[in-house]
Image 1: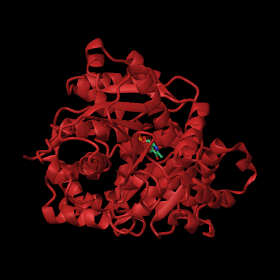
Image 2: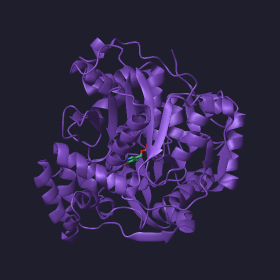
Image 3: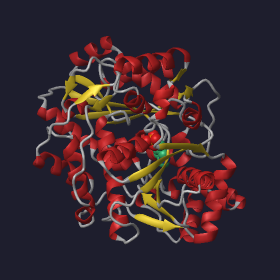
Length: 495
Ligand SMILES: *Cc1c(COP(=O)(O)O)cnc(C)c1O
C-alpha cells in the first residue's frame, strides 16, 4: 500500500515520500506526517536473522513507497557501510540490567549519523525522481551534533551545498572543532551570537521567506532541510528500534511478543517520535520514557499538559538536549488532536505568539504511552560515575540523562519490563564532562590528554572521528548575529 504524507497544518492535500523529503517543511509551515503508519508484518524470528541493512530496507520501504527497491537499497548500502566502525551498525551493550543501544558508531560518533548518513542519498534520489534541476542547499541549525553529522553526510555529494549555523558559545570544544575543520568544497559553517533556538528560528524564517526563495531560484538554488523535521531523518531512525528488538530476541533476552520499554534522551523529540512510530508499526513497545535535562519543557508538558517555553534557557553538560522548542513534538500533537490540522495549527500559533499552549484533557488521555522525567546536572554526573564504578561501562552525558530518568521511572512505577536506553553519543564526544563526572581532578588535564585517559579507563580505542581532529586545520571562522543569517547565506552562495 502506498504511504502518502500531509502537513500537520495543511488542508489535507497529500504528497509522495520523495516530495516530502525534498521539501523538508511544508509550505504552510507544518511538518509532513504519514497519512497512516504502515504495519511491520514480519515475524521476529525472521527479523532476528536479518542484517541492519536488511531491516532498514523492510522498515523504510513501507514508508518510502515511491522509491524503487533498487533505489532504496542503493541508498541504504551507501549509508550503512564502513563509515561505521562495527558491522552491527548499532550494537546493544548490557550494563546494570539495562540495554544500551549504541547509536554512535558512525562518522561523527553520535546518533545523528544514523539518519544523516542516508539523508543525502534519499534527497538526491528524490530530486532525480522529481526532475529537480536546481542545486539543493541544505540549511541547518545545530546544537552541536547535527551540524557535523549533516556535513559529514553531504560533503562533496554532487548537486548539493550545505550551510550549518551553530550557537557560537553553546557547543562543546570538541563539537566546535569537529565542525570548523569540516572538509568538502560544498560545506559552510557559520557561528551565531545567540543560542540554538535563535539559530533554529533564523533557519525557519529563511525557509518561509518566499522572496528569498525566488531570488535564489534565479541563481539556480533551492533550500532543503536536514533538520530532524525532515521525514527523511525520521524514517531511518525507526529502523534501529526494530533492530534492537530483533537483537534482544536473537540473544535470548526476550520472548516473542514480549514488550519492552524504550528510554530516549530527548531534545527536538525526533528520536523518541521514531520509537513511537515503531510502536505504531506494531513493535511490542510498552512505555516510551522521555528523558530531559534541566531544560525540562517536555517533562512539564507530560505532567501538566501545558507546553511553555517561557523560561530561562539553561546551558548543561548535555548541550544537544538544550532545547526549549521541540519541533518534532508537533507531529505528536497533530496525532493526539485526531489528525486535526486546524486544532494543531491553533496550538502552534499560540506557541509562536505567546511561547506556550495547553492541550485538552482528551488529548492528554492519549499520552499514556509516554512517561516524562528529567535529570539535574548533579544527578547526570552521579549516574556516569556510579555506572563506571559498578560495571566499567562509560556513557556520555546525554545517555546518562536517560539512564537517570530510567532509574526514576523504575522507582516511581516498580515496572521491571526490559528496557532499551538509546545511547546517543560516544563518551569521547563529551570527554571533559564525562571525565569530570568520574573524578573532578581530571579537569586539570588538556582536551586530548583527557581523551587518552578515557580510552585507558574505559578500555575503548579512541574513535577515528576524534583522532582526525587532533591535528586538522580550522577551515571555517565566520561568526554573525542571528538577524544577519539571510545576508550571509546569499553571500556564501553568490546569489
Ligand atoms: C540530537 C541529540 C539528542 C536529542 O535527540 P532529538 O531527536 O533531538 O530528541 C540526544 N543526544 C544527542 C547526543 C544528540 O545529538
